[in-house]
Structures are given as C-alpha cells and as structure tokens.
Length: 409
Ligand SMILES: *Cc1c(COP(=O)(O)O)cnc(C)c1O
Image (cartoon, rainbow, N blue to C red):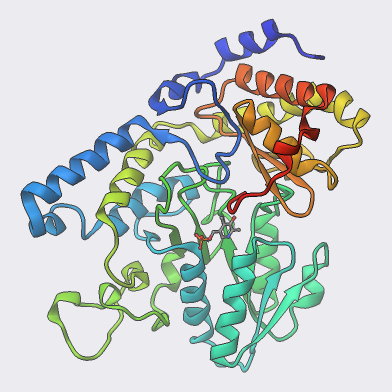
C-alpha cells in the first residue's frame, strides 16, 4: 500500500483522541466502519443500564422522580453543546420520523400566509420524505421533492417548510447550513435540518447558522445504543408557536394535573409525547457523558485524516477494479467514504464483513464506510483497507456465500 504501517502507528501515537478507544467495548477482531448506522457500545453504557435495572427493582415507581421523568430535557442539555445550541433548546425524544412530523405541524400551524407546500429532498434518507408525504396527506398540504442536485432557490415558491439533511446519508456530502438557512428564510420559508449524519460526526453550530428547527438521532455517531431516542431542536425565540400535532400528556403544561384539555408546555418540553424508556435513556446518557470530554475540532481533524487515509490506501486498487469513489472533497465531507460498484458492491461488503471489517451496503451500488474518531485508530483504518485490497485481489467476493441477501443490510 502507498502508506506504511509504521506511518499509521506514528499517527496513532500523536492522536489526542487515542485514549477514547479504551472507553468502548469493541469485539475482538472487528474493524467497525459502520458507526454511522449504529455506534459502538461505551463501557459506561452497560453499567448505566444495569444501574437503571437495579433502580427499577429497588425503587419501583419512585424511579420516575429520580431522573427518569426529566431525562428528555436533561439529556437535551447535555447534547446541546455538541450542536451549537443553548440550554433549553434541545430535547431528546421519540425518533427522527416523529420529530419531523411534530415540527411540520408546529411550523405550518403558525403560518397565516396560505403557503401549503412542504418540500423534502430527493436522495435523502427515505423516512424524511415518507413522513412529509404522510403529514401532507392528512393535513391537506402539498408535498414536493426537491430534485437531487437542483438549485434550492428555484424551488421555494409557495413553500412553507423544507426538510433537508446537512450531510447526505449516501454520499456523505455536507451542505452549507448557514448559507442555506439564510436563503430559505429570505424566501419566507422555514427549514428543518436533519442532523442524523452530523451529530457526533463533526462540529455543528445551530445557533451560529441561525437555524430554528432541527432533528437528529443519537444511535449513529453519538453511540446511544439501538433504538436510542432522537433529538429535536427549536431556537429559543421560536418556542412559543402553539401546538405540535402529537399533543400527548408529557408535552402538556401540567402533565400530572390530568386536565381533560390539552395545553402545550411553555418551552421545549411541548415536543414530548408520552412515556419513554428509562433504560435506553440511561445508555445514551452514559455516552453523552463521554462526549463531554471530546474536543470537536480534534474530532473533525481526525475524521478527515481517517477518510483521507482510507482513500489513499485504496486509490489504485479501486481504479483497477472499476469502483468509483464518490466521496466529496474534504470541505464538503461528512465522516464517511462512499464508493459505487453496482455489480459487486453487495458481495464485496459481505466478504469484508466475513473478515470482520463491517461497513454497509445501500442500494443501488453504494458501499458505505463510516469513520468514528473516538473508537477507531489509524491502524484500524489501514488494516481495513488492507482487507479491502485482499478481498478484491483474491476475488473472494465472487464466492456464492457472499451473494445471499438477508433482511437488514
Ligand atoms: C438514520 C436516519 C433517520 C432515521 O430515522 P428514525 O425515525 O430515527 O428511525 C432519518 N433521517 C436520516 C437522514 C437518517 O440518516
């Protein structure tokens, strides 16, 4: 390979984030490049869930007054610094799909200008479009797709809200969140930012971008665990806008008054719906407590260095095998490498998984590798690239066992 093992070991010796790796429970023999789908397990998460199990056993319903009930707000405040948000602007609740629905209703419910179009983007993670379509169908709004690669400015006529991802889940391409937020506001529309592939992957500055609404998940780069709740951000100046459509008791101004009529809480709490899982919140909280120690500038630097290293190690062999590298240039990149091979992509990923190198495959033809600076070393990246070369050069991806599909890919 073009880069020596000695060189990457030296990079590891100089890495200011190197100490985080031992805070994660990683299986022996696995090189995990799928932290953009499900983050690895922080060791403290197991202890935290176990402690919550004990609390359930010993305290029973009293547990709700011992940190379970206010976990959505408490964890939101722990997450806020990673997103460039202030105290009281972030809540951890439900999932992205539901949070988009809530924000669509909250935003459109405030409009008095007759705009009825909800725009979502072609090429985004499908649930964002699906839920926008569902919202429009039942709320008598018109849904449109922004065609992939189109100029947003030309598609904002009559638009009330647009749903956009900062970092695309397939290509890893990052948008200029500040410039686009300005553009959308100048056209009299609102934007809901989806930060699924930004949060924990790179520094985010919601306040600095003048963003008013955002959602994102915590089980990808933030390592909150399978099914960990999503987050929802509303800028401080926009928290008094009436109802969100999933008006449940936890978002009520006085949930334990048990009034017959709904009245929204006066702050970010109105975006809660109903009872959440104390167990998974404790796993996520343990992870967020690790994040409190992370220097996000160092994280970004290491992320870019790792994606670059992986590509450098593979450039010649990818070219030889006709695999296209569609990873964006560094200033427009999230924290992943994206390759296209429609004929053999699936099988190559399966062959890599059999060697313990876990990436993922997304139709059509996309090989996706996520780079998580907290628990990957430069040597891990180098070793993963070495396996990749061997899979191609040996032709082992052609074996029938690597060409069988299972339910979750
Ligand atoms: C992962 C992801 C989601 C997941 O949505 P959930 O409702 O939390 O399952 C949504 N949007 C994007 C862009 C994603 O990458």
